Length: 493
Ligand code: NAD
Image 1 (cartoon, rainbow, N blue to C red):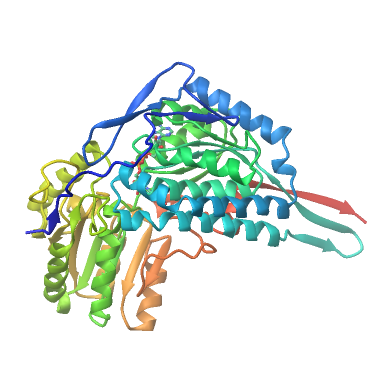
Image 2: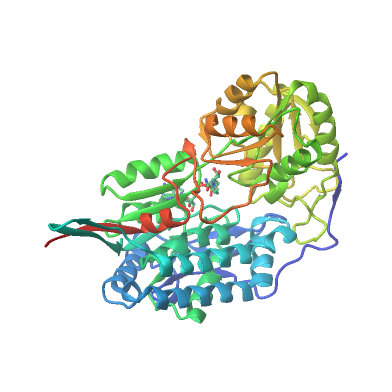
């Protein structure tokens, strides 16, 4: 039976707001219409707050404030060094909130507290990194000897529309806020409706760091209302979106009318390929981490494990035994390794895949709600072996603590299995053969590959997927390119 435990009492952070508001032009405000939506915590599934449900008129106000701050305000005109100083102060202000951020994130998303505790540091690093980058930024100059000098004049694009998902919400917001602000854009952020709690911290953090009013605007609300109005707003020239592939496709269509710039980080079904010559202990540790950390609610989860036939049974037995030891429980308990899934709707979706999996694979661990946790969105870490590539649990993103294992005989077959889904976000390869590692890495259809290693980001590298996993890569100078226009200026000599 899976390890589990119920906490004595569900921890509720102090000073929780009962009303979550927008933040427009330096002020917390309600929706013009007064509309709200309920926000649930994933352990009790009871509503603990209402959040302002932004409509088109709230987006209009936020875009107007961001436009004023862009057109008349100091932010886009500051020297890179001065802007970098504000970004560095933002990083410090984020880290000062580490404990508070972690408890809010854990309460709102169900993420284990030990994993929520690293998020402030990662968010702060995004600001420090882009502060360094803009100070070091060089732009191209070309000379045609005796005739012309031509150079690139880089300009922030304007009001950036940022739309984010509910998994590690604050950290993923920082991935967009840091490069957008560093580039000199002003922003309107629309966070995910399942998890609006931590986004309000940005207002306090930015004010403490001296970001001018109107540069950062936050509108809460559901995707089809607030998100849709932001996507369609004619004065928002670009949208950075992270979320599901189907949502991305709809936003892509809706951006066409205004020919907006778009960056899309979408879903995944990433393979972890384990060859017989791999360091098996390391591969097992890493593949467990890859699919069960962050509750499996992770875009780059290694949710399909492909294992070479000669080590297949051994791998399955050892992996399943470890999965059964994973501690599922109250997200605030430091012993917890897998907490509660974000929302009852998402829980129902994941559970439907667990049930489907019982007819599509051989159940080795988990398989439903852990015993002893009758309430809350808990799913036992679930392992299915012998899963065929035609199975829906092999093809579709589940976004929970559920993994498939499939055997292969040759490198060619492993590659065909790895590439045999519509997604192409990440791939993890385990082998001690250098040639095979690089040959396979270059052939696999994935935006990011980790060889014999965990999913650890280097902020300078491109981040993003291919195929149905995304459009455009951010990361490092690519993000600055996205949030700026590069104008060519030609001078005759
Ligand atoms: P989602 O697509 O349901 O929602 C994402 C955001 O889009 C939310 O803020 C939502 O309100 C908004 N939205 C929904 N409909 C909209 C519309 N019509 N117009 C404008 N905005 C709209 O995704 P989710 O369930 O919040 O997040 C989980 C998904 O995100 C998974 O598929 C996961 O793989 C993906 N994800 C990808 C990455 C990546 O970097 N590739 C990172 C994290 C999550």
